[in-house]
Length: 335
Ligand SMILES: [Zn+2]
Image (cartoon, rainbow, N blue to C red; front, side, top):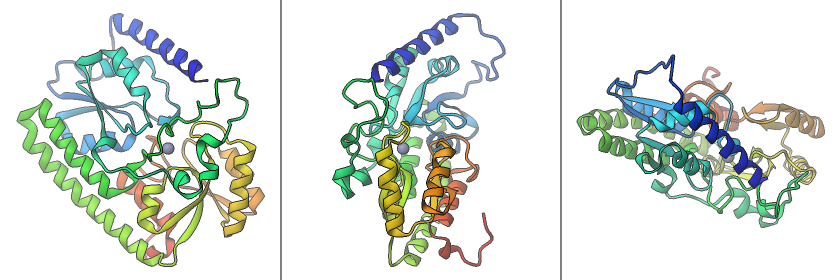
């Protein structure tokens, strides 16, 4: 499967380069707008770049719509967008490794590639720390026909958890650093970038305060089964433990064994809500809900552009807080 993906990606990149050579028409953003052009792999980084860059920066998002970084194949338009970008801002930590090949094919050393996960102190993936018996590499994906069964480890190449954006404190570190890095491309805008980064940091502080309030409400702690192993950073702050995950290998349909473990854990801890994700398969959640005699609800890992949880990073994070620790928001209007 790894090879298949490489072939597919290479094929798409090849097509992209071909399209890039053809005369362009109907481009929405003029080449000579004078604005700095950058690309982000996932929604939170794109939004932070827009917040910091304001009207001075054009930001292209690669994982658009409900496509997500675990399962991403660049379209020809993505390659031409990257070709015209000064920099690509990725997560790293094993999440969006495809960005390396994409940058290489789109222009190589002329385009800077930043892995923002290197700017923060990462934590270990929850499933690795909590239960070594079900760590990703111990599970062989279904219907393989692929070599060694290692393909599923899209973001589990290491033990480090790439989903740092679900912690506003780490988000703040990255937002400030984005201002510094953008300023290197456009020194005349340095002050404006930093001003906006600081203004946005205040919003992140408010969100952080809500997390602290929610954590205090959840004094006894609780265990939860989530769709994939994405919420370690947020759960650590909220005093919640990951009991199991349904989709052990991100981007790969859960194996029967993963289902059994998830169902057993949900029954054990009395969890009646099955969490779905914008990029998840709703049939999987329905099946699980029937098994545990409960219902399904969205929990948003913010790795897609679109989500029913809300439009902005802050809205979507607040939605998650209200879903996870509703008692902390009693008396407030629902989202
Ligand atoms: Zn993930």
